[in-house]
Image: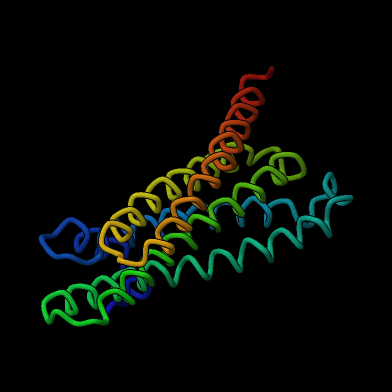
Length: 202
């Protein structure tokens, strides 16, 4: 039912704007993270094969493979979030005991987006230092998109946590997100600051 990746961008945006439940904020969080990964991949691709960056060839090639794997996972989440939301809605209407499992899976999806956002920022930092300098602005945009996706994923996780009865699961998820905040926010800030300094010629 949900085949966003094979539809046009216009179709996705029209569905997102319409008075329909899917796609919604969860899908957008995954898409934003996917865009971050795609931009980072572009920077890596524009670095590979360049004479000035030959000494980093193997490092950038390995980085590209990591980013591509992250991106493929995040792309699946763009549609998976809608599938889970539909199951949550159906279980709610039917007062089904399956509701709790669907809520846990949805929270888990956004925890995974959060983890991948941190991974993307780590790769962005490497690309900032070793990647093609002509695409430094794209590294910065990838980083701020990763942070935005993380913030969105935190909100989506919180929605699920509110209704999950497994208090241990909720506490562990909240603690992990708080830990990620202490890593992601400073890392993104560092990348953005360095990008801006370079663009200004400092």
